[in-house]
Image 1 (tube, one colour):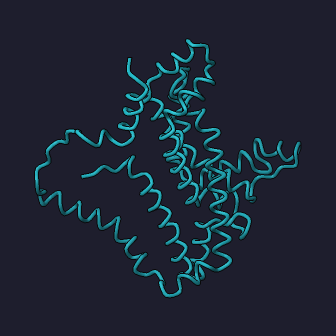
Image 2 (image 1 turned 90 degrees about the horizontal axis):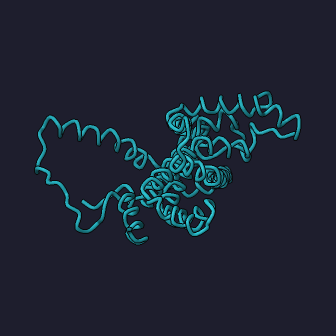
Image 3 (image 1 turned 120 degrees about the vertical axis):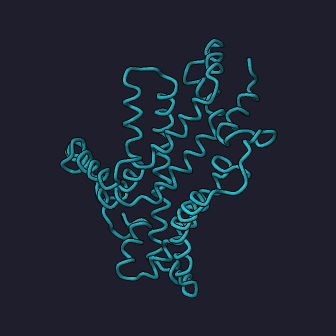
Length: 287
């Protein structure tokens, strides 16, 4: 039977693509054939050129004035608040859902997994329409919330959190489920034989083992929530100070003040780079 240290090392290797030292790398022939090199360079230019253009066209001289305007700080504050709240919702609901998919064998599990990952490929605006049909004032559930409790979710800050959580939670579920599948379930079984309930085994044994996957999934969910646009503007609208997040502010500024739109886009670009830097151990390995 393997030790907890060995299992933790195996989980870390799974997340980072393998051990850093002593890993045998396949030999790759030096140089590249021209028919492959040219499309590869074109693809690289296609992906990098827009980002370079954004940096080139950034109004560096007036950037501080653009970023310190009350409207920008209002949108940034709301974005950070809502993205963090959406991530908290994703953690509370997504981690148990990932455990269910990874550890419990039940009929229709494949269908449930497909439904959970559907927001990943669903156009965000369609997700916003679906949320309106479900939670709007005349929605399937929303009409009862309004009639019984007087709760109206669309076009509110809470609506922003719901829209962001809807599109961000699948990222966390996929990350945590993958980490759970990489851990050895025998430790949970051993805890059960010692008298621990399944929830106690999950809390005391499983959670420490899957903490890296939870952290990575939370970062991904937070970044996705921060950049959400389609579902937010459809379900929550674009009201400054209440539902206007950074992506919506960029869209609005692009129509009236392109320089401000560039400055706001630069902030979101910096956040994206920071997220990639934070996840470098998960998806990037030394060459």
